[in-house]
Image (cartoon, rainbow, N blue to C red; front, top):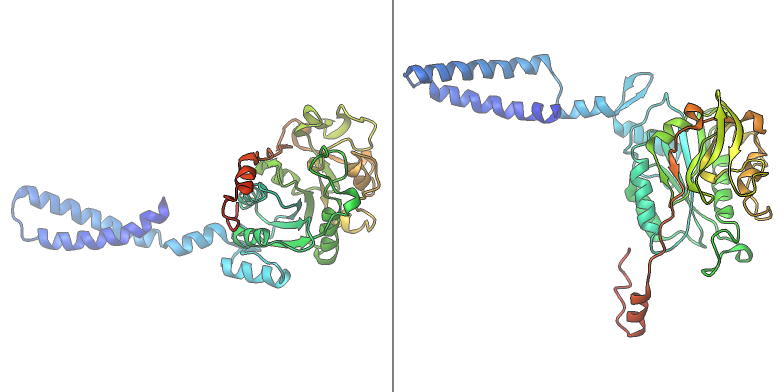
Amino acid sequence: MFVYTVSFKNVATFILILYNFQMRRLTSNANRILLLLNVIWTLCLFFSWILFPYTETNYRSNRHNKFKNGKDTSLATVRRLLRQKYPNDQGLFSTYFDSELPVIYGVTPTYTRWTQKADLTRLCQTFLHVPNFFWIIIEDAENKTTLVANLLKNCGLPYAHLNAKTDQRVKLRDSDPNWAKPRGVSQRNEGLKWLRKNADSKEPSVLYFIDDDNTYSLKLFEEMRFTSTVKVWPVGIVGGLKFEGPVCKNGRVVSWYTAWKPDRPFPIDMAAFAVNMKLFLSKSDAMFSNDVPRGYQESHFLTKLVTKDEVEAGANDCSEILVWHTRTEKPNTKQEDKLIKAGKSSNPDMEV
């Protein structure tokens, strides 16, 4: 609101000066009083320029661009520094950046479907509110698609756009239930390879695996940002339960609330943990595998990094749900199929 007041003030003062000049010719007592009030208001506006010397431009600069060691740096400089560090597949960095905060690397496997763009758009608009967020998207495809490339380019986040095709032997068919075979293994591993090559072990940062159709609270990202080893928290609407995850007491994980295969080393969902990047980079064998039993992907990965006693409990003893394992409903396409058979299909060039 202050920004618009400053801009309006310039115009208002100019108009009042002209108005006072015209009012000077009037002689009635009422007009003299009105003239006096206008002169007082004009002087107040004039002196406010001195008391509040912010323009719209430098107001926004000071609000958004605290960068290094308390110095004010323009957003253009922030973008330039990020482009130097990540010269390939670099999006426009429009979110707030603070060098005092660890970076969050979000790794998201994705695949082509009708709801893909809608799901990724929702995530993009969530992550734009998260300071120091770098998005790594890996497509399950032989080549990167134009749809995802354009979405990332227009999103406004720094990103890496990768692709890795799932082996046909373990790829889910349309008729398979989503738990029948491992999903996202090749894509997550491709993202981890990129991080080992590009991430700086001296830079404070954390790693988080993000499904493209989950729902994330902004509070979750501040919860994970200062993870020292592996931090865990509960996930809502998962495993056939209201929620699933760690049971914590006095800042420590004492047990796990789950119904399916509770004997797993880490019986949690992929969205239930974040990893300190320095720890991850120090463990070269921390990867995912297609050869582990169903439901053991998280445990296979985490046992390469920590023991059960080394994990950190989420805030407030894991008592708050900040991520939900939601799934986008598969669209009903029967009417579209009928039109295609009748030779009246919709515009094939329309991107949904």
